[in-house]
Amino acid sequence: MKKKYSQNKILVGVVLAILATIIWSGNFIIARSAKDTIPPVSLAFYRWLTATLILLPFTWQLFIKEFGILKTHFFYFLLVAVTGVSMFNTFVYIAGHTTEAINMALLGTTTSPIISVILARIFLKELIPGTRIIGMLICIAGILLLLSKGDLNILLSFSFTEGDWWMLAAAFTFAIYNVCAKKKPAAMSSKNFLFTVFLIGTIILLPFYLIELNNKGSFEINGTNLIAILYLGLGASVICFLLWNESIANLGAGRASLFGNLIPVFSSIEAVLFLNEKISITHLISFILVVIGLLIANLNIKSFIQALNKK
Image: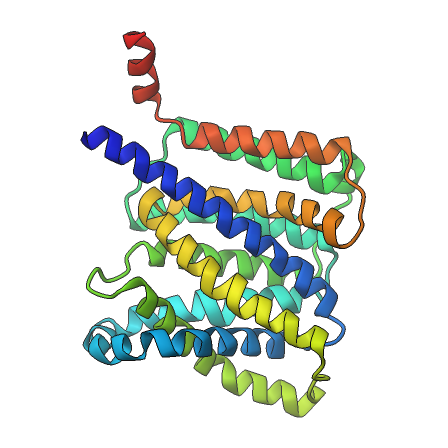
């Protein structure tokens, strides 16, 4: 019975992680189309402000009721908010102005999961089974194939720019968030946890937004920009973080982080659907490799062998 419960828990975690990556992948589509119309810090600030306001009516009473937990673990919440809210996507949006898309995707999708696994091993003592390492390497191979379009020269000519360093910083901060989210105080509800983190992260972003506003001015308020901010605030923030945090609780930080490798795959599919870009055999092979890598990374060898022996 306990074994079946554990398997169901893993299955739920996998489904939630996949749903989160599908929605998250749209973040890059939106960010790409808005990068010339909305400054990066402004985009991040209004994204998280929107997310905070959406959660406010559902969590205000919980926030007051559980305020003592916030006071007790204030520096924990500060770290989670800074890494997962204030820094991560702001760095991504800044990187998008000074580096190419291939560099962003390559650095973000391959380094963050690896850093998450390493940090989870160091600070959470999560074991790193051989299957997870093998699965992670296969996922990376699939992503490299996708990003290089099957051309080795593209990877060999890869060089760092200022934006690449911003992207590395973004990957590192999200890896820290993944590990920290696993240690969420059990007494705090998931919805209030998100609201608290979003609120603190938005407050931290406020002075940087005001500095950018003073230097670059405001952006045009129109339907396209408002829809972009709403998508980021509701879909890529509230919904995705609820799904992702629950996935981490079921799978563990290291295992859940591997599903981030699906984001560029889904981004490619969404680009075909919404940006009329063409899909190639390279995309299909890459997708198959990533799926195989995820399956291997989440394979329980002992259970698999026991199941074979029963047959």
